[in-house]
Image 1 (tube, rainbow, N blue to C red):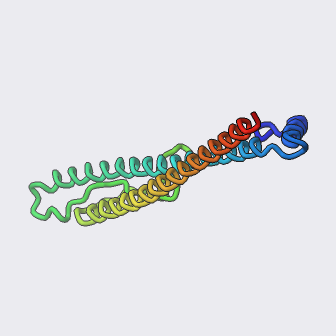
Image 2 (cartoon, rainbow, N blue to C red):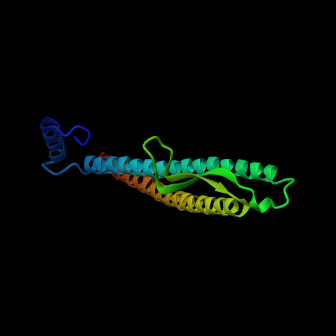
Length: 183
């Protein structure tokens, strides 16, 4: 009935539910349905947490790619200023990017909020690298929080499964004991 709540399924459920013993509801079937629904919802919640972890991993990968671009620019800047008298005055053109760290784009990639090609000297390039490292740290913290949340939720769902198992086992033992006592 829960998977396909048609009128016929609802009627069949109610007949089975109330025809257990002298018009009393079938508690075993009701508990089974409640437990089944609970397990399905728990699995959906786990999928949500895993999706969040994947998002943060994809963000970290996008930031790492941009960091490699900045490191390449730093290498070019070092090579250009190698034999210069004033290497601090040498600049290199760099795509300076800003990112939205709240979510990924529709394509599953990091969302650029701004991009501008600018000439950067050593100090400004180092500032850009430090800012990117700060973004990476933010994503690492978010990923760690999501991982901790997933672990806590997983532990609670395991407790739920153990509780369901215990209840079902106890009910089965009570049912078996009742049958044995009747014989």
